Amino acid sequence: MAEETEGQDAEGEVDQDALLAEWDSMADDDGDADGSDGEPTNSARVLDQSEIDSLLGVDSSSEDGSEQSGIQAILNSALVSYERLPMLEVVFDRLVRMMSTSLRNFTSDNVEVSLDNITSARFGDHLNSIPLPAMLSVFKAEEWDNHGLMTVDSALIYSIVDVLLGGRRGTAAMRIEGRPYTTIERNLVERMVHVVLADLSAAFDPLSPVTFRFDRLETNPRFATIARVNNATIVVTLRVDMEDRGGRIELLIPYATLEPVRELLLQMFMGEKFGRDSIWEGHLTAELWQTTVSIQAVLDQVELSLGDILNWEVGSRLELNATPASEIEMRCGDVEMFRGHMGRSNGHIAMQIADKIMREGES
Image (cartoon, rainbow, N blue to C red; front, side, top):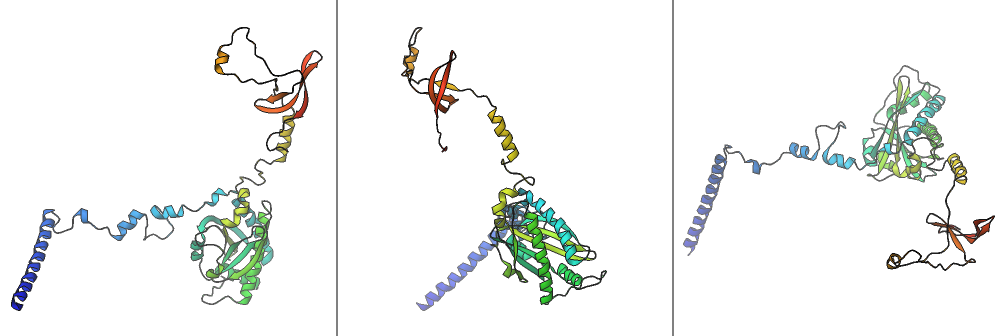
């Protein structure tokens, strides 16, 4: 019995080997029949990574911020464009002019401030794109009860320190990498941040009074988290030039911070009141008092069926329930205005108003 079992196992192994060989030969025959010399057919073709990226609109080779498409474009389109808030450009133009003057007084040097760009970005993306080392100043908008972030890059930090401590002109600011900022550097930058925040408050004053209060100064972006990672924010980049020295300041304001003044930021020009212009209101009121309208005196109303109306003939009479003492209504169009009594005055039919009909919403 044992010999028979071993013989069957051996025959099974041989049969399996024969089947595998037969399948391989069939696959080779199919490949030759397709005329691809053993190459897989198009129906079984597997896409490589570059083709998958092309279909999804992800270009792994270009990371220079070029135009995106596909899934990346859909994800980025969820952000609100700052251009929907046209007053922001006016506010930051005022900030640039005010900072040029205040930083000249602060540094006693020739300072030029320019607005590079205003963009929208997610908070997490901006935080990851900050070049380190840098100083991140967290400030709070008191009246709006929310926070903002100001980033000062290393080039401007060393330039401010060099200028305030009497560095000579014509020498490039020394950049020291790989060490924490000293107490003197932090204090000098904090003084500059106070100057910028005061100018930012003054820039918003014509639109809405707000006080931006300095909260804290951080060097690690993880400790400067003021919003959720996916929250939409506005990033304003300012360039500060002091002859041959300078750097950049980035102001990050979340859309949630600007929500209390969103209606004001939607204005097309400073001073727009959204229909509450006092001059126009006075003019409209004066013209309304001189307007002529038609008033109808309704003696009575009788409801009749269509059949009764069709049976009317010449000489038919319509009886009203009004008497000489009954009150009648005075209407302007379909709006009931007054109640009163009808009579005669100097040979003319006249109305004497008894009271005013109060409509819904009137006290």
